[in-house]
Length: 95
Image (cartoon, rainbow, N blue to C red; front, side, top):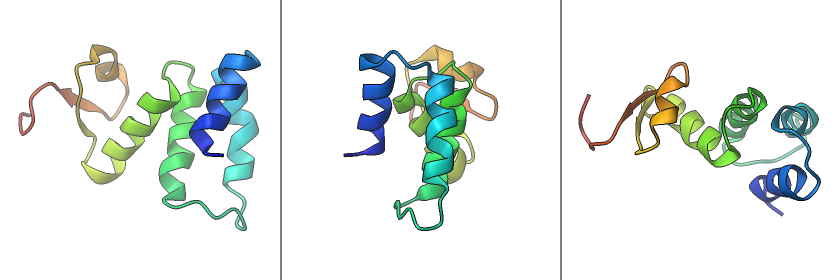
């Protein structure tokens, strides 16, 4: 099962809040023996999810933008412009 599926089941099926989901999963994901490719990205995504303002998918996109593109993100979702550290644009290559 992927981390995204776990988040989805907890928040959708069991109605656990995003903040509670992040609080429960972060210690597990951070365990040294928990082998997750690009672990730091998912830790950051869970931290963003914990703010309660993003879906896990959006949190992953923002975490990726922070780590791989200096916070630049191409998206039509204007709400992502409000995420600290994210510079959203709707045009590839624009600043």
